[in-house]
Length: 462
Image: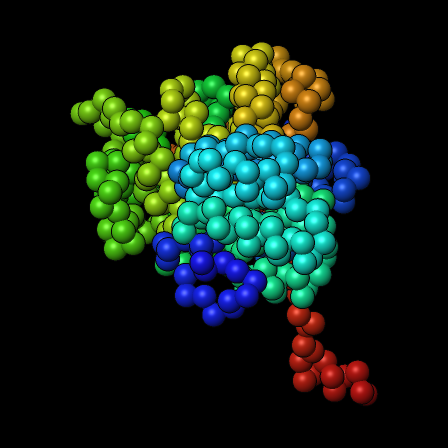
C-alpha cells in the first residue's frame, strides 16, 4: 500500500493523479462595506497622472479556466462548509464537472468507497485532531483508486500538519471558513495545464439591443487596454456575418474566428498566431468574415473549444458578442470573466437589459454583476429614461455614462479609426480610459519627480 503512516518511502501515491450628458460620468455609487469597489474589484484612480506607469493591483486580473469533466464528491460536516460547496457546485467554472455534496467526513467517505469506486476528486472536511486525522486518511487510502486526488478541509491551522499531509500525497489542505471561489480555484489549480503559462481574462461585450454601440465600445476599450494601459489584448469578433472589427481598425484581415471554428482541434499557438491580424504592437484581431456566403452553423462545443484556445493568446481577450440569442451566445456570455452590458436610455433597452442581468445574476452567483455602460445619452429631441430611474429598475448602477457625440463617433467609424485617434482630449476618450483601468484591475503609479534643468538650479542658488 502506498499511502501509509509507516512507509514514507512509498513509490506509488494513491492521491496523486498521473501527470496527467456633456461628459461621461464615472459612477462609484459608494463603496461596499467589504472595502471593494462597486463591481467587487479594487477601486482605481480616475485617470493616470501624466508620465505615470501602470501597475497591476492583484492576480485577479488573470482569467480562470473551468474545471475539466470530472466527478467531484464533497464531504461536509459543517453547515457553512456545505453551503460553500453547494454554491461552488453550481458555479459556471464547474459546469463541465459533476459535483455532489454529501454530509459527513472521513468515516462516511471510507464507508461509501468500500462499496463503490472513488471519483477523480474527493474534498473531505475533517474535524479530527492530527494523529486521528492521519490514521483515518490511511484507511481512506486503502479504498481509494490510484488516481484519486484528495483535498482536506481541516480545523487545525498547523504548518507541521500541512507538510505531513503534503508528504503523504494529499493534494491540498484548507482551513475554514471556506469560500466558494476558494474551493473552485483550489480545484482548478489541481488540474491546471503546466504547459500553459496563463489564461487571459475574457471580457464579453453584449448590447441590450441592436445599434446601442456595443461593438464600437468593445473595440475602443480593447484599443485603450493595449495602447494606454499597455497590456497585450486580443479582440475576437463573434459576429460572423456582420462583424465590424475589420472596418473599425481599417483592416482587411484573415477570417480568424471562422477558420478557428472550422478546425478547433488543430489550434495551437502557431496556428492561432497565423489567424490573427496585428492592429498594433499590443493589439491583435480575430476577425469575422462579415459575409453572407455561409450560415455559420457551429455547435456550442466548437465555440467553447475556440473560446478556451483564444484566451491563451493574450492577458486580455475582448469578446465582441452579437445581439442574437442561441445556445452558444448564452454559453459564451456566461463563461466570460467579465460581462459588459451596453444599453441606451429607452424602454426596449431597459427591458432587454433587465432580462440579461437577471439571467447572469442567477447563473453566476459567485461573480460580480455585469458592468453597465449607458451609451448615447442626450440625443437631441429624443425622450430618454433618466439615469437614476434606469439604474433603479435594474438594481445596478451604471459603471459609465457616455454622452451622444455624433461627430466624434461618426468620424471614427467612417475613417476606420479609434476615438482617441480622432480626438484624444474628448470626454468620451477620458471615460473609456477610466473604465479600462478599472476593468484591468490596474492603477497608475505615481509620476517620477520632475528633474530641474541646470539653469533652474543655478537660478535658485542665486
